[in-house]
Amino acid sequence: MAKRTSWDQKNKSIHKSRKKIIDTVFGREDNTQHTFGYEGEAEQKHDVGDIWTDKDGKTWQQRDGYKISVTKFDELREYLKTITTCSSNECHTDKYDHIDKKLIAKTGMCFICLQKYEQSLKDDGTWPYYEDYKISKNKLSVVRELKDKYESALKDISNNLEMVNEDGTISNWKWDIDIEQVKKDIQSDIDGAYTAIELLLKRIGLLEDKLIEFGHPELIK
Image (cartoon, rainbow, N blue to C red; front, top):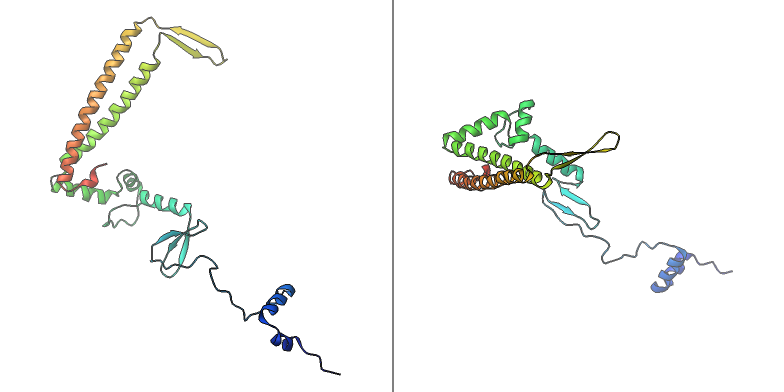
């Protein structure tokens, strides 16, 4: 009786294309077969600090020797860091107290660094213009707010007033005033506010030119 031929022996004599069909049908794996071509996104080389988004929409940042996933929480954390940390490159404050934290939120610097910076502005002659610039900006903000209130009042003013009571009923009131004269007075205040805004904007523009002249464009906000 002839000796039965093993699968391995038969395997050697089968044509490659036929063998691939048989292997596929019976779920056999052929470790000698290799697939060439595109199998996914190619790994690109990135420098330390680079941030990129892959094909799945996930954001990564390259670190020294490895990469980390960047999330919205990381962006929020970085933002919170910028508004709670002194922006001065020469800051040596180890621990911020409540005064430092308030100043950082308002000016970007801790108490000591802000003192040093303001002194440097006084030394080079910038301070008077910067102080005037800040005051003028504050005045502009106040006048604009008043103008908005005047315009709202002019729009809503009437001889008749309605008030909703706690029980849901409505009470009607009537002012015994010259409503047209009141509107004229309010309009006069509005016109005055626009004139003040125009003058303040001109003054601020001139002060900004001076700050640039003294080499401090970073003070313009």
